[in-house]
Amino acid sequence: MRGAVLALMMTVAPALSDTPHFADLTHTIPEHHYSGGWEHFVGGGVAAFDCSDNGLPDLFLAGGEGPALLLRNMGGMVFAPQETDLHDVTGAYPLDVDGDGVLDLFVLRVGPNVVLRGLGDCRFQDATEELGIDAGNGWSTAFSAWWDAGATRPAMFIGNYVDRDDPTGPFFACDDNQLLRPDGTGWVSDPFGPGFCPLSALAARDARDRMTLRLSNDRHYYVRGGHEQMWDIADGRFLDSADGWPDLMLWGMGIASRDVTGNGLADVYLTSMADQMLQLAQPDGTYDPAPFSMGHTAHRPFAGDDGRPSTGWHAQWGDVNNNTRADLFVAKGNVDQMPDLAMADPNNLLLQGTDGKFSEVAHSAGLADPDRSRGAALVDLDGDGRLDLVVMNRRAPARLYRNDTDGVGNWLGVDLRQDGANRFAIGARVHVETETGTQWQDITIGGGHAGGQLVPLHFGLGDAMRADVHVIWPDGRESRHSVDAVNQVISLQPD
Image (cartoon, rainbow, N blue to C red; front, side, top):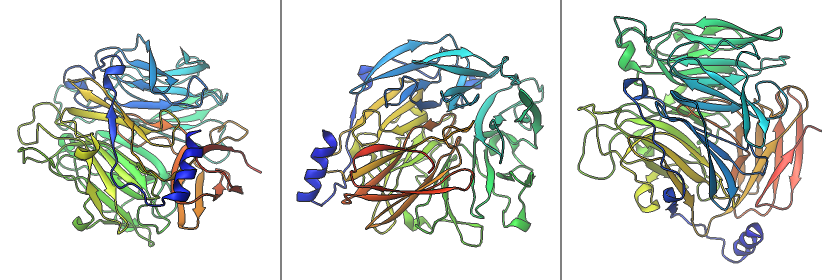
């Protein structure tokens, strides 16, 4: 019904809202903190995925020293809490590990990681040992997964932070990372290094249009000799200056990837302490730093009297007013009590204008929470086509916001399924074409900070009343679909 109303509105009044508004519904969910000592200064992720099979995203929230929390989405922004007995959780990522068509959860922890097999109806079973997965015993803070060509199960990367057993730590004590490759009936576990304390990882096509594992590393703990890393998946090697990849150093926290310039290549936003960075992908396969004039930096608090540098964590692109332009949410907050960095550091919502520049609207949108935020999820929680938001906080309750923006544009959700083990088509690329232009997104597992989403891809369409969808499936097949009814989620399979 909402979609029909929107379509009617757009035929009468084509002007779209440039003023997002979110209602704070935190009081409707249980109070939940990301708690703990120094081993939980980082992490605190949110996983969003549909485990109840009702077409709406459910939420899994890390708890640190406290228990993780599952919020079952009952519709209408009502969530039923399901307690878990999982402690020391830093984050989680949804994916179909066993290829049965039901989403599982890879849960990152301080200590052995856990793979929760989805049983349907938001029921889960610890299947780590049964699946033959080495749980490790580190301080896991980053995750990504992909399907190699012809593989029947995913390869999985686990990024580990400081080696808790190194008596010389925490400085110069980054732990080895872990790479899980499918082998026989299980996975082979190999150390992956050198490790520079990653806080985010993303396997996706890079500016060269090759599948690459990008690692965002925390310079605070490698101090010298380390840098951001790019690992070519097919070649099995790290990129270097000969590939046009410089030794970029920053206190890397989160990764968000989206084509914001319209050149068909994915640009990358990196959160950090002090310098949030936007890397613009170039046709020659390299990246250039975006100019400050784009308004994306978010390097200091935009409100209040604390002028010290910001600490950015989770970043995510999403069209919050459905005007066809990707906007950017950045969760921010002091690690704990670091005196050189801002304490009152409100989260950012950067709205992209028609000129490609970004403007800060978090305060007027109702999202300028100054607490110590960590992970987040910008997803449509109630199925009305507007992206809602959940934010995890350290030492403060998790926040839930409903997008109540008036006058939004039309939208389209795209949900892919295919036969075989990679049922959710990880690695596919979806183009949505309207009379105003073309947008595209990849289906990936990873990025953000300590949490990810596996939900239908969301596209804002502006005034468009129809669209053409072009899918490049993971095996290279292509399919095209005409959509004459917008404001809905469509499910597609290969032709």
